[in-house]
Amino acid sequence: MRLAHLADLHLGFKAFHALDARGRNLREVQVSAHALTVAHAVAATGPDLIVVAGDVFHLPAVSPAVFREALGIFRALTAAAPVVVAAGNHDTPRTRSVGHLLLTLADAVPGVHVAVSEPATYHAAGATVLAVPESVSPCDLPSTTGDRPRVLVLHGDVQGASPRVSAATWPREAVTASWNVACFGHWHLPTEIGPRAWYAGAPDSTSSDPWQEAREIEWRALERGWRLWDVDAGTSVHMPVPGAVRYHDLNAGDAEDAAPADLTARMASLVADVPAGDVARVVLRNVGRDTAAALDLRAVRRAGRHLLHCQPVIRRAESVEVGSRRVRSTRSLAELLADRIAQNVADPAERETICALGARYIQDAEPAEVAA
Image: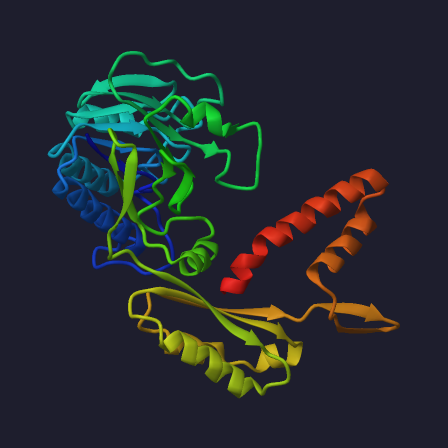
């Protein structure tokens, strides 16, 4: 049995100021267009079943244009196979006065089955599918019996996807042990939780921190797309779909004592090498006040006119008090953090706990900084 696993389409996502010819946010249009490309790519593989692990929409209420595009995407999917959707946190209204768009979508497109407020079991394509929406807290999942392959579709945090663990984190064993295949959504990069358990990742860049994602994509040599499963064998393969807008987090290095004109040229050169239509941020670190005032950031943006968005970022030099003067600090981030905690947390035990947590976060972030 062939199963297609998608997640985190985030239709209706907007970013930047660029508009299309009709006045719509260009990123919103691009996200929908790429999702339709993905839907056609999925249908072309001839799956027996398609699952979408949440966050079909970026907001619980979207424009009529975005909803029409969603209808086209799901009609393309259902032309190939039945579709089961588990609602994500972005899909889910937080007030009762707002209707659930996924229910409207399922009414409009035959062959779409959705779970929006509680786990729901569906029998499709010879498999038993349990769809668990984001609104369900970690718990003992309903058991499934019989000879059918068992497929779990869940939107949420699963142990192993992140160093963070909270009351909303699903234990790994609870969502992998008794399933032939476990299909997750919420994390936007392809992530393996176990031999038969994966986050498919988002097919486009719709994260609240696209720059961190850009660094990790480069560091891990990832490509965006979806996942194709052989349910009987319990194996899967990532299916990249080119065409999504790429984000580039460019490191212009340390300003040191370089002349402002040279630093401007350095940033502009990095931006000019980015492919047309992509998005770039170029970061210059340890910039003094006078140097920052003399930089020509307009020239940097002009060098990025071929891009969807160009964002120069100036990071000021850290400084500390020495007598009556403030001078650049050469101390590490961990040392600066420990000093700030010591100034604001009185209890020694609590201070030690917070310092250890901060040191762990800094350590977790170090590979991404190296990749940048």
